[in-house]
Amino acid sequence: MNDYPPYDELLTFAEGLADISRQLLSKAFVSRPSIQIKDDNSYVTQFDKSIEETFRNIIGDKYKDHGILGEEFGSINVDAEFVWVLDPIDGTAQFIAGLPVFGTLIGLAWKGRPFLGVIDHPATNDRWVGVADGFAMRNEKSISTSKCKDFESAFVTCSNPDFMSDEELDKFTRIRETATYVQYGGSCFAYGLLASGRTDLAIDSSFAPFDFFANAAVISGAGGILSNWDGEEVTLNWTGGILAAGDKSIHQKAVSILAV
Image (cartoon, rainbow, N blue to C red; front, top):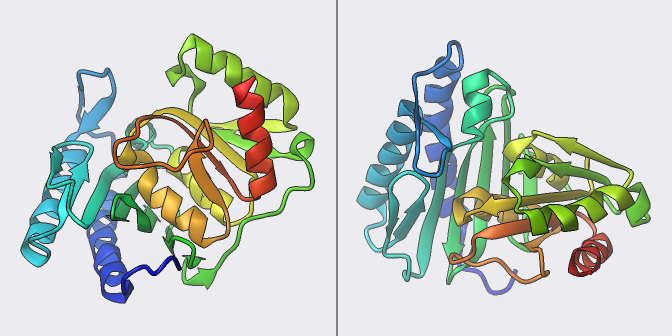
């Protein structure tokens, strides 16, 4: 597994964080929370902030030399060997609306690359965990991505094309017109499903590391790949379009379509 360091303790710790967010979000999901609008016009709730603050305190107590990059409170020590990449509620709009596809993303970068990840969905009682190039599990059962026979038969997901620029939308349209079907609105749940072999390709834009680092580790562990739209490896500095596939040949085809 690319000479990665021991992961057992770190993955157990990450799942412990997910247990905390699951307990909070399971209760919060019952009724619509109060909301605020951030500078980028996205939603945030008191639960986004309180969960991330809790995570940061626990990580700081346990791993004082680790860095943290989170959606709500920025970054500290991101040049560290290990950096926790946190999205307390991925799919905040879905959480507010009561759609059960929101989740908590807990990723750990090692030397700037996706290392391990947890995708936790309290509303459906689903949890994906994985180590890049190693393994992935859904609810403690081993999973692997699907091998799509050709791009024309690919089942694609996209969280929301409204976040794409005009140029990105033109490129995405070529994907949509070539593949058999595109399902919208799945948020991070769609990336878990890709790792489980239920879908073939996921494409999104306007993503930051906290949106995809956990997903990248899980998908890689299941045998798939996650990159930017140019097919390049994602880093802690990357923001923009994300492309994930269960089959590397389908991924290469998608990159070529986007490059036209």
